[in-house]
Image 1 (spheres, rainbow, N blue to C red):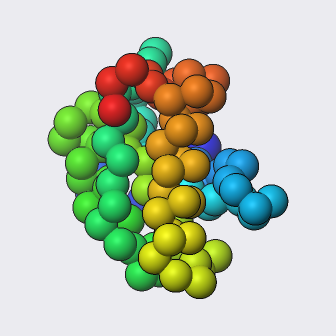
Image 2 (cartoon, helix red, strand yellow):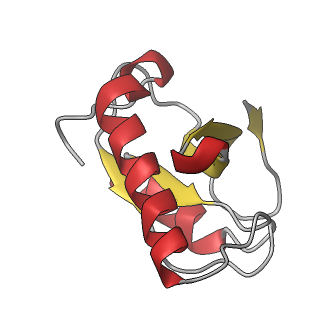
Length: 109
């Protein structure tokens, strides 16, 4: 995780790839308040960032809510709506099952 300057919000950002169907991975970004400790509630943000740097809304949400914001990252483009839904579901499932290892409270999404 690394603090990211320039957004006005003190946050830490972590990029991951989690398992998804069909052997592909689902890229995601976790944005959390820099001073946060322990298990955080989670906002799954489906705002549609077009580039890897378009995460200002997620930064502002994390800092303002004191929650972790999970954003499906652009980059691996889905071939269609069904594939995009599968990736989003894989991320949601990962947060619920494995997110605790990254300080995410999967019971508060």
